[in-house]
Image (cartoon, rainbow, N blue to C red; front, side, top):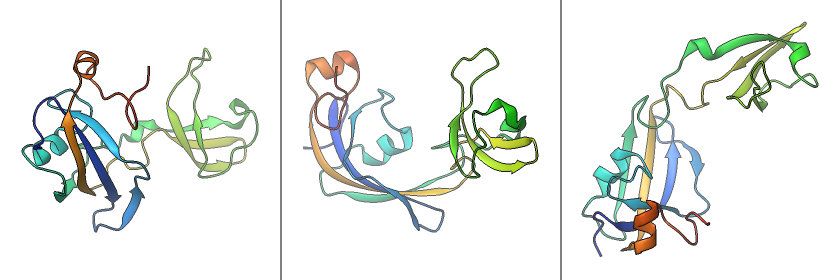
Length: 159
């Protein structure tokens, strides 16, 4: 079966740096509803449209296509007293707003004296990446999946 609008696509993927060195490899298949449902990157849908199981491709993802471009205003220095305990460099924490609301996930860059420097950018923001995809399955989406605009069942959304 060919990948077309209203099909469910299963993929294996490897995300690599700009030279293709692996950063992340999916341990479970990536499954999405094809056809403009915003379940995956538009570049993936374009590359796979009309393809069949077994098809493999590598996509170059420029900064901003998979993750946002870096925003240096998201690098902040905060008082160490804002943290329940002294964080370690490299730790990812959810940064709470001034009124306790949930906020952005930040990475601790530096702990120096009474200050902690954090980065609210995604760790892959601003990087050129390579995404290798292998189509492992294609099926017709169910009426319920089309109504809900996402895949249900194994490796999909569960209600």
